[in-house]
Image 1 (spheres, one colour):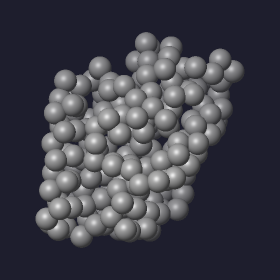
Image 2 (image 1 turned 45 degrees about the horizontal axis):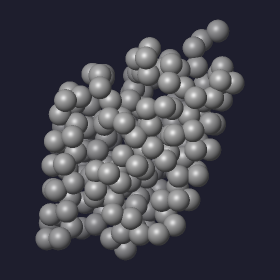
Image 3 (image 1 turned 30 degrees about the vertical axis):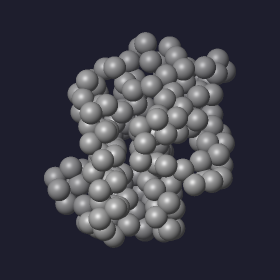
Image 4 (image 1 turned 120 degrees about the vertical axis):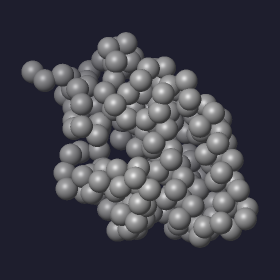
Length: 195
């Protein structure tokens, strides 16, 4: 039987053996069970997050949001990763890069550098690029981005109107858009976010 915690595709973040041991629900034996447990936790966090205005541009809030999204499934929820990944920056650079992203984004908003949708797309791409947590970074970045949009008086992004966890055409479009943004072309991500 295939391990339910193995990578789903080359864009998934692999977990270390130590991180995999931090799975809380003991009943999980299949990937769909893991996905369902995480999704239930995320829906609970979403209800909390959108219940009032939040200061998304705050490291404590971003860590707390990740914890709320995954605390019933993973013991490391809300904690920065300590190991290197196939995606993201070196682990020791997470805190300063996140601080820089927050400062940059605050500047963009306060000075009208970009319209709100572009601020959100740039924020999302950089947050995913930093990849601060052992796993759940895309889902966390999408929720944080939607909270940022709402705080700027804009509707949430639609993110292709599909489940981006399971492999498929929509997830591949999202991954391709992120990779294009890695090469300083945010047009695909900009289009995908509202598709």
